[in-house]
Amino acid sequence: MINIKRLTHRLEELAQIGKTPNNGVKRFSFTKEEQEANKLVEGYMREAGLKVEYDVVGNLIGTLAGSEDLPTILLGSHIDTVPDGGKFDGPVGVLSAIEVIQTLNEQGVKIRHPVKVISFKDEEGSRFGFGMIGSRAVVGTLMEEDLLRKDEAGITIKQAMKDAGFGDSPLESAKLDNIKAFLEVHIEQGKVLERKNVGVGNVTGIAGPLWLKFHLQGLAEHAGATPMDERQDALVGASLIIAEAEKIAKRFPPAVATVGKIAVKPNAVNVIPSDVEWTIDIRSTDEAQRNEIEQLIKQYAQQVADERDLTLHITELQRIDPVQCDPEIQAMIQESIREMGEEVVSLPSGAGHDGMQFKDRFPIGMIFVKSINGISHNPKELSLDEDIEKGANVLYYTLLKLDQA
Ligand code: HGY
Ligand code: MN
Ligand code: MN
Image (cartoon, rainbow, N blue to C red; front, side, top):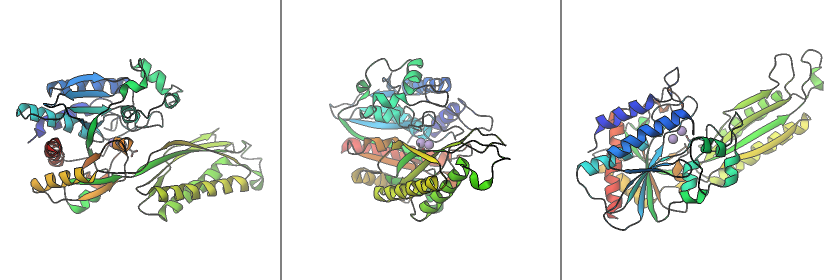
């Protein structure tokens, strides 16, 4: 069984890096906080007996040689965060994987397949509005033009990558071949496990996020001197579209749609807004359903723009297909949960994860750890030690089953 004291101590130590005033965590990719966090995780990987390296995009990779010449098993998650995130989203997966390898080495258990533990670069997409840079690179779908995306200071991914000491060889050099499967432990970030009163769960599939940026252009005019029926008010237009997006999404449960970011220009009390930019994050485990929601929102937005003499531009930021977790790996996870005397609960993931990038390339499996009150992407994010211990032990037993398969 894994050493939960060591695992939770490392979680706590990592959470100190990028700490925010209200006890959250902010570690954006290619920043000094994230680099510092990578250094710490490198040390854990070495202590676990992993050979440490970085690839061209800055994925931190710990490798354990297998006793036989077989395809590689990938483990891992991410340590980058949303702007004011919790300390469990990502690190629970990276540190559980390291803990499992360290435990196996301490027990002298030989693993047949080579194993790579990866801390994937920029899973969240918080800094550049384009996520999963590391997992895309690992399967060769990260393109040069993707690196032209900019953060709010106008710095491109390419520049940030270079400034952090990466990016000095072709992107293709990050591609990993001959992979058997990918296994990830992650916090649920929802309320299902809590409602079912279990600490861990088997993930059946991952909802696909579609991120769109809406830009509505009207005309800046004097707030006092412009009659109400002669305005081209971009913000009133945007608010009608945002409210309708929620109504549309509610017609298609369990799909979701979220407006998370908005910017108004010129953003002055006494000026009618000329420009509004906002994002919509639409998710469903059913791609056809997600496409229907997308079309309905876009049609309504164009109708509002036409009626109010506004100009509408919609940019696609990212479109990731929903993915099913491999049935055989799910069975191994369920068996491991049963062997630990826990009730088996299977559930889909509303949140996106790196495993989505591996769709149609190699099988994936995910193990969820209960989130208290289902809160995540928030400093109040919390998972209990006993549940984190269960998640890491399920990973331990599942890895052994996968290694024998
Ligand atoms: O957006 C997501 O679902 C994940 O947290 N990156
Ligand atoms: Mn995550
Ligand atoms: Mn997240």
